[in-house]
Image (cartoon, rainbow, N blue to C red; front, side, top):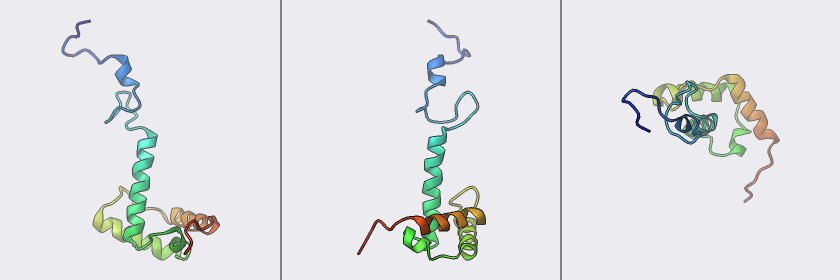
Length: 104
């Protein structure tokens, strides 16, 4: 099959979920790739705020931590948006439920 210069690509390349870059159907990167980026960004923000473990997170207060995350993200631009206070409260509540995996 001979394609002209402006013909669309074969349909198999449009539906390939592992393809890099924006999708031709307008939906952008896959949700799994965005979730992986979001987790990495959150991890970087928390580490920059001095929270390295879940055990440390459970002892933090949500308001000062959310403020510190906002300040760090403002200066280092690690994420598009800073986490909301409700999200930080949710992280802390979840960290209190989890059992510690590392023992000394």
